[in-house]
Length: 140
Image (tube, rainbow, N blue to C red):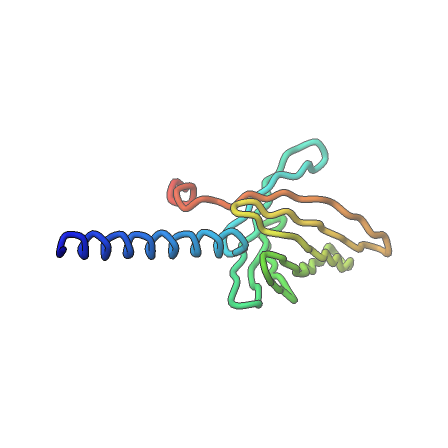
């Protein structure tokens, strides 16, 4: 009887632990926290873009390095159920360039739409960023 009781207790704990792990995996699936990378083509040359995000409830903060080592903090960052939105404002000379990003996190993939307004012209591009793994950070 004790053996059956102990076995039942162990099975219950294993089931509880598995459910907790599944809940953590589901939470991470839509969590934008991390470092994201993607490539862009700039005048025939590939450049790697980096975006660092941190979610705190429905608030999203982060930064995006730019040209010549300049780092720009994101503005108006929001996250809800894996949906993200934020704005990046940069100056190029006397020109203010505002890019609005919206997208969705799916595990280690962040699909974004970036809409930029510059000199009265609007452009739109699709981005698929990959989350940088912890091991990749250690190698650097």
